[in-house]
Length: 251
Image (cartoon, rainbow, N blue to C red; front, side, top):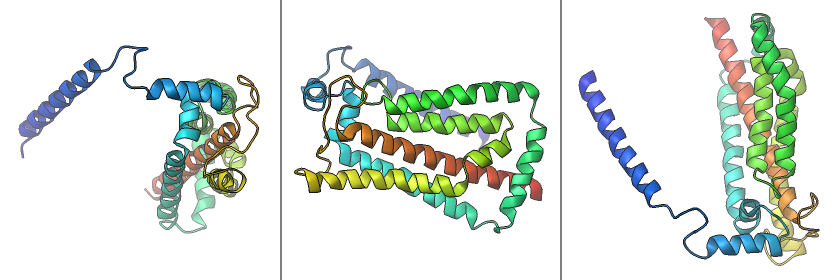
C-alpha cells in the first residue's frame, strides 16, 4: 500500500473518530444535572454513611471496591510480567554494569537539568504524599498519589541522580512494597467477611467527617493502592532503565 493511500485512510479514520468524540461531548448532560439518581445517591452515601467528603473515593473504595481490587491486581500482574520478561534477557552480573553505566550517564547530564530535576523531586514527593493521604477528603487518591510518587523518582533520574535513585529505591524494597500494597488490599477486603457482614464491608470506626482519620477502611485502602501503584511503576521504570542502558552498552 502506498504512503498516499495510508495517509488517506488515516485521515478518514481520524475524521470519523473526531466526529464521534464531538457527538459524545455534545450529548453530555449539563454540569450539575446528572442523568439518573446514582450520582446524587453516591454523594449522599459518601457523606452520611461513610463520613468522607470525596464521593469518588467512596465509590472507588467502598461501593465498587471489588472492581478496584481487580484493577489493582491488573497493575500488579503487569509489573511482575514486565519484570520477568526483562530480567530473563540479561545475566545477573549485568545489573552491576548497568549501575556503572548510570553513573557515567549522570556525569553527562546538563547542569540546568540537574538543578531543575533536583529542585522539583522533593516538592513532588511531598505533593504525592499529600494527595495519597487526603484522597478521601479532596480530589486525588491512591492511584493518583502513587503516580506522583513514582514521578518524583523519575525526576531524580532525569536530574542525573542515578546513584541516588538506586540507593533510595533498591529493587528488593520496591518488590516488597508492591506485594505489601496488593496484599493489604486483599486482607482488608477479606476483613469485611471476618469482622463485618460481607467482603469489603467497613469494620473500622468512621470518625468525624472532614478529619484525616475518618472514613473507616476507605483511607486505609487508599494508602494500600498508593503504595502498590508507586512501587509497581517504579519497578517497571527501573527495569526499563536497566534494559536501555545495557543495550546502549552493547551497541
